[in-house]
Amino acid sequence: MIRLADAEWNIMELLWNNGPLTTMEIIRELEEKIGWNKSTTMTLLRRMNSRGSIHYEVENKTKRYYPNLNRNEAELEETKFFLNKHYNGKLGIMVSNLISQEALSEDEIDELYKILRGDK
Image (cartoon, rainbow, N blue to C red):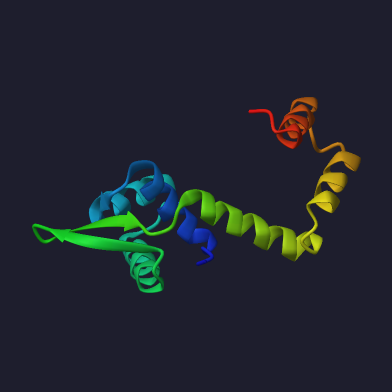
């Protein structure tokens, strides 16, 4: 599985939510949202294409970009990386830390209980 760099998540979010998108649509969106210039966006698009996280098809001389990664799989990979990096892969340690630091609201705790019980 390809792990996305922080900057690459911005492009993937656009493609997952609004894709496929042309080069200029991506450039305009990221310039407006983040302030990236054209060359920054083009560099990331080339890098992501070469790594296989996105691909493009040419239509009337216009590149249209598509995600190659499934959103849920990318999020799961990022979650696993985070847990391994910060909590030795142990979800229980992370949740325990959040609870002991009172970082979870009652609603979030209730949501965790529902998830653990398998409620939808």
